[in-house]
Image (cartoon, rainbow, N blue to C red; front, side):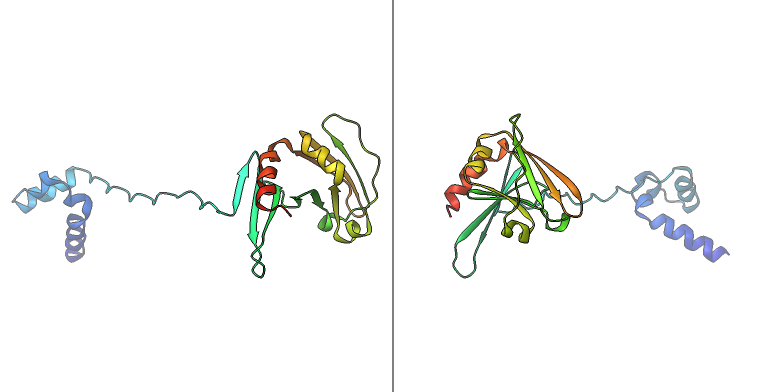
Length: 188
């Protein structure tokens, strides 16, 4: 029992908390030194500093502005740069030059849709083209797409086969700067 007690005292005395107390350490008499260490609670060793969290590395191929992201990629065969513009957190909404797509493939496909720009009138129900039906996406292009570019808000109501009515409400005014950048970097 005395050996265990001596080992505990020895380990305790050699611990960093006790070794950092110069008052007790400098006492020559071992009994007095032990009493000194017993009387004073040890100072807790300083907690190791957690490594500083670095900010996520910025992707040089992604630009974010106004809640939208412009993602660029380079084709390995042709070295041609392609661009896609999406609202942050909604990768199923994609804009390429002259086209806006909203994907519903995993959400029941597209049976029909209508849209509304800002506080304007609601469009008539649009039937999907065979391609839109096949890819399960709403495609807005041409003059309607140009109207979307001038609008601040786009609401789309989609009738799906499985999920019934689905609604998207997009603040499109934030994507104008990125769309202009996309037109410069990826004209086709």
